Image (cartoon, rainbow, N blue to C red):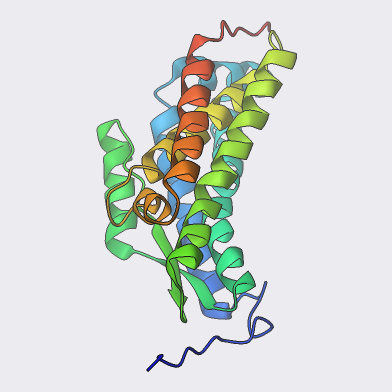
Length: 224
């Protein structure tokens, strides 16, 4: 006898955010932005350019924080929203939830000199078969692959322009996130993707590796 399957109506929550979810998103963005600011302050050339641009160290830090916030929103938040919106498109309830322990680890690691970012994850509820899980999982790394590609193209087109500071960080951060999340071991996205479609996993991993290698092979510079 075949089991009965129930699917939540797609309109129930598609593209919507609860107040609780927005709070979790806001806290995660704030902590991640602070962590990246702490990490990138040690890159003297970045802070040096911002100080040259603004004229004061305080304004340089403020500009660095703004840049890090944009990077966090585009790289981390959009990754999670990729999962969220795909799950909602498939008719499931999904919301982002921060991890207090993960955010603490993120902040402490940035103080040590490296960044292990584990801000939280999207929680999904509803029936999902292997294909649904694969589609939901690939949506996050796909966002990172797209933004890494945008960053690489921007670096090539604007090489010599100080804008490549942001574009290089955008490209390398998103390539690293895509690679990490595509590792085929639970609970990472790659484990569900390869279980659903090894071909799609190989293709996604191949593009992510290519982007990662490409950004490191570019001869980038900027002129003040």
